[in-house]
Amino acid sequence: MIKVCKFGGTSMADGLTMRRVAEIVESDPARRFVVVSAPGKRFGGDTKITDLLYETYEDVAACRDTGPAFEKVCDRFRGIVRELGLPMDIEAVLQETRAAILREDTPDFCASRGEYLAGRIMAELLKVPFIDARDTIKFGADGRLDSERTYSLLAAALKGKRRAVVSGFYGEGKDGKVKTFSRGGSDVSGAIVARAAGADLYENWTDVSGFLACDPRIVENPAHIRALSYKELRELSYMGANVLHSESIFPVREADIPIRIKNTFRPEDEGTEIVPTSRYTFGGRVVTGIAGKKNFDVIYLDKSLMNAEIGFTYRVLSVLYKHGVSFEHIPTGIDTMSFVIDAVELKNGVLEEICREIEEAVHPDNLRVIRDIALIAVVGHGMTRSVGTSARLFAAIARAGVNVRMIDQGSSELNIIVGVDNENYERTLRAVYEEFFM
Ligand code: ADP
Ligand code: ASP
Ligand code: MG
Image (tube, rainbow, N blue to C red; front, side):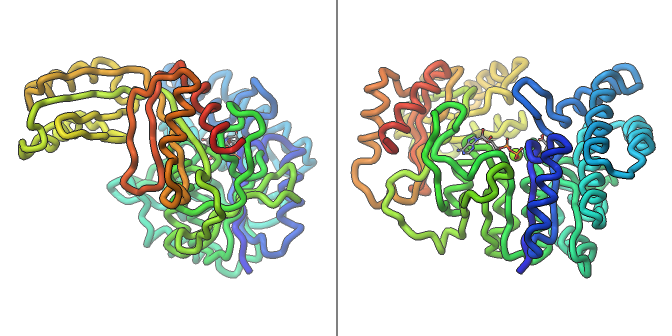
């Protein structure tokens, strides 16, 4: 039995929590390979090491030197090594790291040092080898994971080791430079290591006792989800349930490796199991979970006989493609079409430019932009089996006095997505949760 364990930022926050991590790993001989995040927040209002490192890079870019944020990073790591009483020359490691940050001079390299340093310390604490993700996780020229090289390099590095620590969040690009995943990406690293190790289980250790039916920062004490399918996980995490990075399922899915979410601070809790969709059994519930995200813009188009106009969608999408803008959803009607886009992609005049080019490309009867929209996704395989789910959903939203601005029932039949004004996000989420879970 081989388990790969990934520990998130709160589990790595200080010496005390790192000691807990070591106890968890050592309590089970199957826990062979450990993937770590950079130290996260120790308390509300604290700053994650990764955020301090992005700040450090801004200082390097502006002044050709590391500034106060990097001093804070050094102090955190010094404190951790002191708390753990490790015989490690942390000063020398930090000096080396500072020189490397100035030499390599990229934001990704700088940000990756949190995981690198955390990994070295954890390896020292467990007295096992450290595997640098730079040497083993490789990206291709297109920026995507080079699976073939990665799995063969990682498998070779893990082979014959009783235990090892691998740094999360980054790898090396085709250009030889360090490249990170998007934020929260150590979850993806963990999945890659699980795949390379041929693991029987990928344990993802965090600060909650599993996947909850709704964001616990918005709904008080939401229901616990015992099991979830890969597909449900993908929908929920993509739509904002950031317990697990939405791309973490791909490496494990190919090899049918289940994931278990566990709580570092309550290891006895059962957590949540995420299983291949084919092994998913219907437990009688209609909705598995609810997730959401704020800050989208919707470009709404209408034109009579749009459906009969060959190439209409193609021409609109070409405009988005030209600007390198990706969309989240395209709800359509016979003569209407909306493009839901993350507002971050439309800043600095991009939205205005795109609208002008769409007008030119397809001459719609109407083009409107609806700004500041929040999306809420109601997800569950059970919805296909139960009549009236959308009626319940919309009745609940209406009772909360919220106007629905957009509806998209995904063709996966696994989710219904509604758009509401940003300001109504929390209220809607609570109302929908109450309808399906209370
Ligand atoms: P880590 O640092 O361990 O990777 P994250 O902060 O990335 O942890 O993810 C865990 C957090 O995700 C929880 O503390 C919780 O606030 C938040 N969260 C959001 N939605 C959910 C959900 N549906 N279930 C559980 N946690 C959720
Ligand atoms: N440390 C990185 C972040 O804060 C990656 C991770 O924690 O997964 O995004
Ligand atoms: Mg995370």
